[in-house]
Length: 114
Image (cartoon, rainbow, N blue to C red; front, side, top):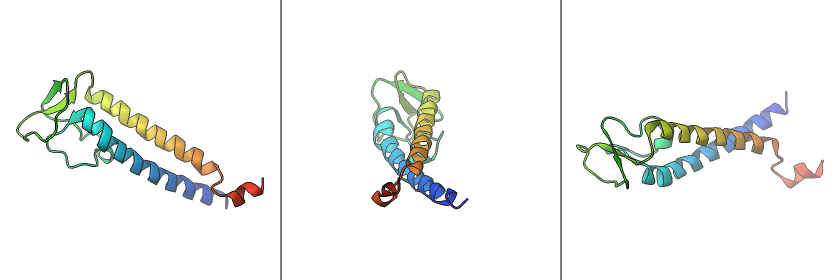
């Protein structure tokens, strides 16, 4: 039981770091290239499903900074469903990497006992 606590702590720390990384990637790559919500406030990765809503216009290139009276836009070839799938891949990757990092030793001292 005692060894579960360090594993859980390492998992949670790794998951927190992965969440920060995924939030940055989502806001600076996915949000910039795949869709534009005219009333977005940022941190879209942490607010799944609140990306593109209302009227949606498919466009060949996403342009930001438009009026809120204009419809939200999504890159041609993408859909809200595909954004959900991409978000799920981000989450699953975060969990798997966090679990893998949790079971790995984090210091040389831990390696010397093996």
